[in-house]
Length: 163
Image (cartoon, rainbow, N blue to C red; front, side, top):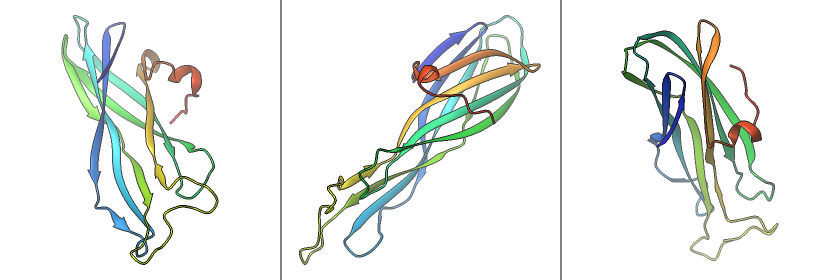
């Protein structure tokens, strides 16, 4: 769990697996792929002595996708979303789940009759997509009043993608 304070709110964020499917071989004994949907649970805590109302939350999820059998570096991907918080009581908190992104793990496997367990081009026999971070901005009456990023350096290494 990650936490950041900004003015009257504290924002916490936790990675969450939404669902997953069974591993399945694409062709007999060539590769096994498993895809899971991952997102974040975001909690906004009001530390002020008055209720906060009509908050617009915008966020960007950053992740990388690798392709099995390809030597190229992983592709950076983003997915944006919004959430409206009607009200957070004084010293109260509320949580919501972000949209999810599909993350795939793939492994090349050999066959029972002596098939390949490596790629002739020298690519890794595994590929794994990963979540790399989330950037959150909270707006009240059209003005930004809170911001959070995990990891903290995300704001200097990536660009904000408006929804």
